[in-house]
Length: 292
Image (cartoon, rainbow, N blue to C red; front, top):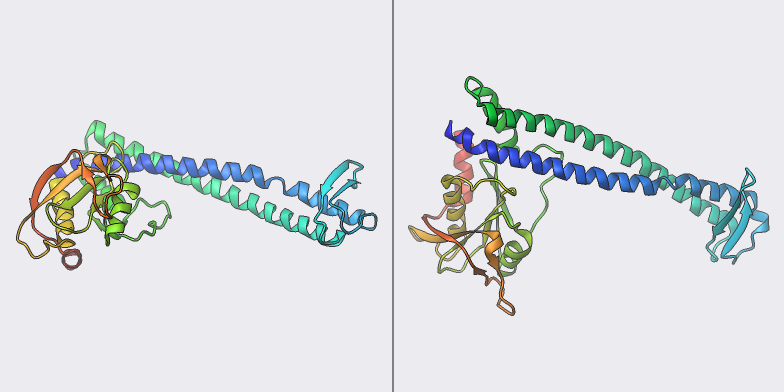
């Protein structure tokens, strides 16, 4: 029951984030569709060049011609090629533009379907949050398993996880990233991490910086998740063979890099400390697999 209560706000935030992303992708496809709609103009240019090919001399950079409907056109030409090749150049642009229109239309349709599904799911989650889920535990648990289980890794939007130079793990629906080198640590902490992400580092030992992805306005991950992430940070540090080690935990917004500081060195302005033992992620996920 407590796990469900903890997961619902996270699930709601993820759904809203995915809706916002889908809307942005849809807007981009609409812009691309508008640009691709010039393909009919390019086809008319090509047709007109062929109609008037005998009147176009090679080396002409611009031709004022009349198309098949009697409309005057001013067409830019490539001076290095002849009329027929210029026509083929515009036909190629027309084919590419037409195909672009078809692809953009398909993409817009796909995003519309994704948005509709995500909005439907969001309405279900809000219903659970507002009205409770007594007697519907199985329904909400299936819902959580579908979208937050480690096998899902991400909400199903047919997107692959982005490729990064960092170690990446998914534990109970939470994405965890850890740097491999000092340069990776800088990249992870300063550029890759979002302000709301949760940042970790073993206190007093050289080692990986680590973050848990956390959607904006989502609650802090539960202690179990913090301890697992902190333990992984310790494992990828010089303290991996220690029994217990303190780790600093902070929102990534409070992590900054001083000017001219060496790779891997950052300053954390606001943090809390947690004492954890090292966690070998390979052993952790192997045990999880065996339990399943």
